[in-house]
Image 1: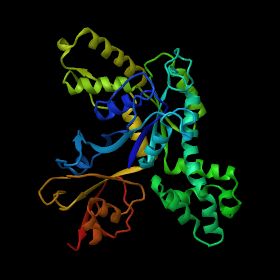
Image 2 (image 1 turned 30 degrees about the vertical axis):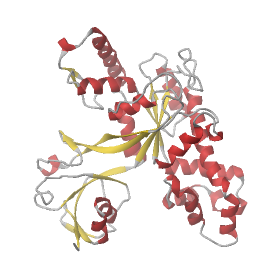
Image 3 (image 1 turned 60 degrees about the horizontal axis):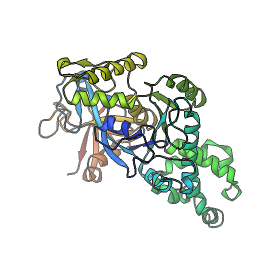
Image 4 (image 1 turned 90 degrees about the vertical axis):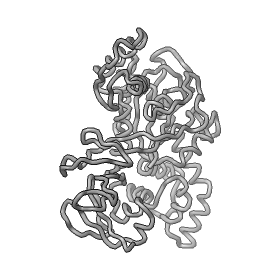
Amino acid sequence: MIAGIVGKTNVGKSTFFSAATLIPVKISNVPFTTIEPNKGVTSIRFHCVCKELGVKDNPRNSKCINGIRWVPVEIVDVAGLVPEAHKGRGLGNKFLDDLRQVDGFIHVVDASGSTDINGNPCELGKGDPVEDIKFVEYEIIMWLFQILKKDWNKMVKRVSQQKEDIVTVLYERLSGLMINKKHIIMTLKSRDEFNKSIDRWTDEEIMEFVKMLRRIAKPMVIAANKIDLPTAEDNINRIKSEFKNYTVIPCSAEAELLLRLAAKKGLIEYIPGDSHFKILKYDELNEKQKEALNKVEGVLKSWGSTGVQEALESIYKKELKMIAVFPVEDVIKLSDSKGNVLPDVFILQEGSTVIDLAYKIHTDLGDNFLYAINVRTGQRIGGNYVLKDRDVIKIVSAK
């Protein structure tokens, strides 16, 4: 699963990306600083099973800090949007093409209102983040609508005259967008009007189908950025009131980046998502650094965190519904063949089965699957067993 950082140009998307990944990228307060998508790896938190099962783990594909597993996930920061991007304005065509690979969106919005609709700096509070959210959503919807509408008559003929399955026909058109048959089925079931013959769908109904499909197939979290500025709080309240069906996370990507860089240099002790930090080398800080940390401390006191980690975990855990599963080879020692205790953790979507886990670990393990063991219960389970968060599983194969 890959989350895409989206939004209009010049709202702090690249700062958010850099704060999450510590990958240095070009950051500037001018539109279209990002042209090529920035791709990187960050981590989200899951409760480890080590303390519950009374073992000391030594992870390989993740980190365990005080019983919390930090699991790597991919994110991508794409070029900023401007109005009418779906018509090719700005870097619209490139931006929308970059969205094909992502499974969900973190929509970074300038909650302070310090940029206009085109991403140009403006007087503080003059920009409207509510309208920004609406136009970005509209551009994504229009992108999907155009893709579906392009071959609509051919799809109608296949379903109505050739009696092909509507799910299969829609899937063939949309599969390149990381949209699967389950997404399409859920969307078709969401409204009564989608149950009538496809040749009777109006453009308005196609548009409604696309809106619902986007919500199901590519969910979105709103990261209301720049909470360190005085106009942000009122705008965040407006955003929450206007977009009640969205998770809205107050956020300061700039503060998070400062904390992450200071921690990397050993100047402070800070874990992403925490509500506090500890200065370790006060004498090595210059006045500018002290002033910046004081400002960040004010953000943490007012908002509880910088919001970056919360936004990341909201898209993966709440919206994409990812769960953590711990595979082992030795059910007694909870280790792999080399003695590493709870060496790996894999994240899968809710509803995934043991056979899905087997294939995620290795194709041969899936191809030669025999059965699995639920380590907690000691029970033998089949490939269709639906995994639960924090399951510990041993997979037995023919090889």
